[in-house]
Image 1 (cartoon, rainbow, N blue to C red):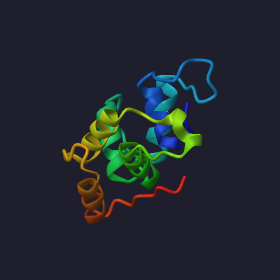
Image 2 (cartoon, one colour):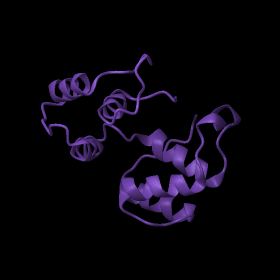
Image 3 (tube, rainbow, N blue to C red):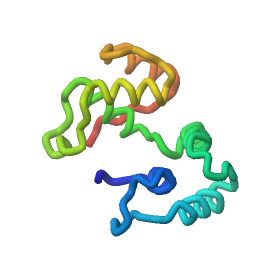
Image 4 (tube, rainbow, N blue to C red):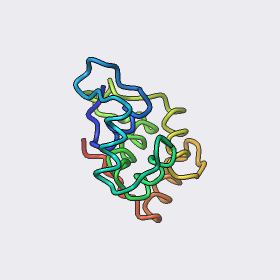
Length: 125
């Protein structure tokens, strides 16, 4: 499992995607309580609402996420990160989900849109 940012860990626990026994594991209730306490928000168990709010705050998706997806589209991930790579299709779908845009494999269009919309792109891994 790749290194998770704090709120990503909580969201994955809310989705029950971290198996019991892993160091990052929390119960659904624990993850929800921490999210509520740390953010001052309360979306209950509505994971989509939590993800949207956290993304809007810039808390979940950071510049390395965008950069990593773009490097993955270009098939230029550093060798020591190949274990974290995904298929190009998955990178496109994730970018589309995060941004609402659909540039397919057009890396130049993705880079332009991300830059124009003040999304920092960090490809220094």
